[in-house]
Image (cartoon, rainbow, N blue to C red):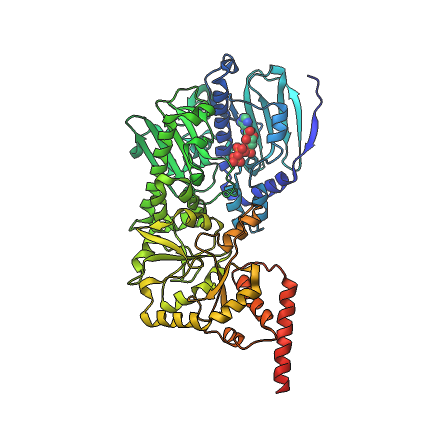
Length: 640
Ligand SMILES: Nc1ncnc2c1ncn2[C@@H]1O[C@H](COP(=O)(O)OP(=O)(O)OP(=O)(O)O)[C@@H](O)[C@H]1O
């Protein structure tokens, strides 16, 4: 003991968040209670988990509960739990900083527009700091499980940049958060009001939430608080109730608790599985992607319970990475209570449960995607916009479900020519032309680059649809999903273009003639470009552009090579094939060019590289060539 009260500063982000939160969330102020009860419940869950290996942490107090009370005279409301508690250092760390993944993204997404920012804050997680919406001072007194009574901590702050901490005595383990209400917030000093809020937002909490009972005092002619406890919530695990007894609102509130989200989920599935493995699953798809969606190391959202006892958060073995956005609860009847992460990793039972969860989620997505109902269909669109990029990873990750995932994919295509990803592979196949055997796609770094790719010219001319892929992960998708519904997926920028039955005899003949006629020129270009290309040939793909690059059938495409390079990975160097268009005047005149043949040949290559979004090895050389040629042309015309 004897440690002096210390004053410390909040991390800059906390100050900013507090400010924003008080203003943007005021219209929703009662949620502070939900957040504090949620934290109290998490703290009890954490204690139960640590106590699995160290039962002495319970001391003589093993009935976990949450108590909400208020003091009218002092104008305070208090939320107390006998969970894991906080040590001094933990209080300083957890209640003074934000240590979440996605923090940077969150702050850079803020707009200054209150309505929009309220949304973002909700998505980011409001938690403990939401106390300051209604309080102008918050006092947290806490004793970590396992520490002595004199090792408790008192944290206090007016939420304006600084907080104090000091060591104090506390008889019981756990945390009490006392809110000193702001002027005008007296509505929270009513049993009736507080009970209503708890029932609305926190009914699903599995621990009892206790309040003192109130009765009517005849003499005083008013409600008085008695000494008797009553449990305000149902305090039974929501997922263990039959579906018919759970309302949509209850499902939604439970979601907000498990997912630490502010908004309603997009959809949920609730099922009891019987048979070899018995378990209950209540799984949700959020309506918004979290800030750290693309971070494959970010935390997962499934809580594991065994026979209603909380075992762990973030049970990554229960969901594959490509479904890392799913939130919810799995409650097993068969796993041992002392199951650890290590055991989970090798458990066959877990594998079966995980397989069941994946099927359930894919089924839920299919039901949205295939629904006749417009609202459900709209949900699938929202889902795809938020999480499509991640679901795509599944094509390579989950071999067993590859086909099902394939059906759920949505792409942009030349059909609408807009960036909106709305075309399924089944839609594409249904629209395939008579005689078309393959599903064609192009990959590029951006939608615009894909849409304007010279490789599409012949496809546009013939009215053949091409999928326009511009996500990085699309390269991964197409390398794993090589077939759909018996049709091969074919890059329009790879290999020799064989349009098969789509080409008529006259076109074939003309192409052969051109190849013959240009043989000599092609050889000359090839000799000029030397090591820069793998081959040069006459194209079938172009109608307007003079040249384009293609990758050999089994080589990496240009886009993939650039992605790998940007990611600092060693890509096997493969050289492109240059295809030139004999219909183009620039190619035709090359037949007669002598003095500047080298410049022209290089330009054919360089513009093809630029058109597909590549970088030139010698940009200065390119600029010089362009200028020389422009000069030569203008001199030529001036001389006329
Ligand atoms: N009642 C409590 N008992 C023990 N620790 C607590 C309690 N309340 C908060 N904490 C600690 O403070 C941390 C910060 O809480 P806060 O509510 O700000 O964020 P969070 O619960 O981690 O996430 P979110 O913001 O998404 O709710 C918690 O992660 C926890 O470690």
